[in-house]
Image 1 (cartoon, helix red, strand yellow):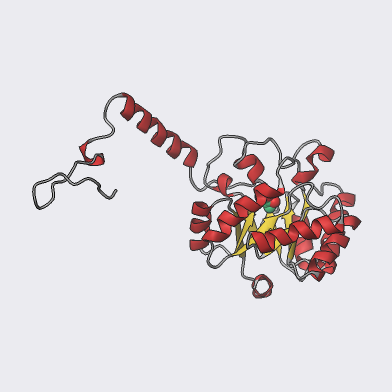
Image 2: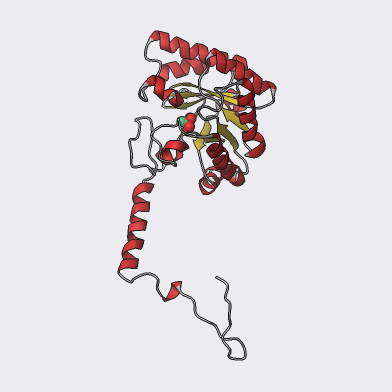
Length: 275
Ligand code: KIV
C-alpha cells in the first residue's frame, strides 16, 4: 500500500502513538502508518534519551495501540539493546512485536553491516521491516548530542548508500531523520521503496512527527522541523488548575455531580444505583 502511494505520488501520512486513546484519534483521522516509537521513552516515560527503553515497555505500549487501531499499519520500534546481541535475540524480539503485540511491522535504526544481516533474517522470517537512517537517536552515546546528519559530502554519501543497502536487504520503507532536504530528495529518487521524513524536508514520499510535539503536549525543547498544531500543554494545565481551584474553593462537586438514594414504588429507599 505504501509503495503504491509512492508510485502514485500520493504523500504518506505517519505519526507516532503510544496508547489506546491517542491511537484511536490518529487512526480515525486516516493516518496511513502509526509508529509506536521508542521516543515514548522521552515523551511519555520522562527519560532524557531513548536508550533506557525496554522491550517489555515497547510491547506494553504497542498492545495498547493495536487494541485501538482498525485500519492503519502499526509499526513497533525495536529499542536499543533489543537487536545488539545476536540474530536469534533480534528475531525473538521482532516476533514479540508481531505475535504478542499485534504490530504489522518493526522498525530498526541504523544500517551498519551487522544491521543489514539482521534485517535480511527478519525479512526471511516474514517480518516486514522499516529502516531508519540519518539521525539515529539510539546512537546518542556515540553522537554526543542530537544534531542534523549528512552535513559533509562523505556523510551524505554514507546515508545514501545506507538507504540503498537497506532497500536491498528488503525493508519496505525508510525513515530519513534530520538530514538536509536536498539529500532526502536524492535518496527518495534513488529508492523504489518509500521514504518517510522527519526533519528531512518536503521531498520525501511521506512525513512522520512525534504526536506529543504535533499537539504541543510537551513543555520542553521543540526541534525546528516540528509544526505545532495545538497547545495541549496549556489546555491541560488550565483544566487541572481549574479542578484544583474548584475543589479548594468548594465549587466542585455540585448537586449535578452527586447521587441521591431513590425511593422505589413502595416508598422505600433503593439500595443500589447505576452510575
Ligand atoms: O521513535 C520515534 O518516534 C522515531 C521517529 C522519530 C521516527 O523513531
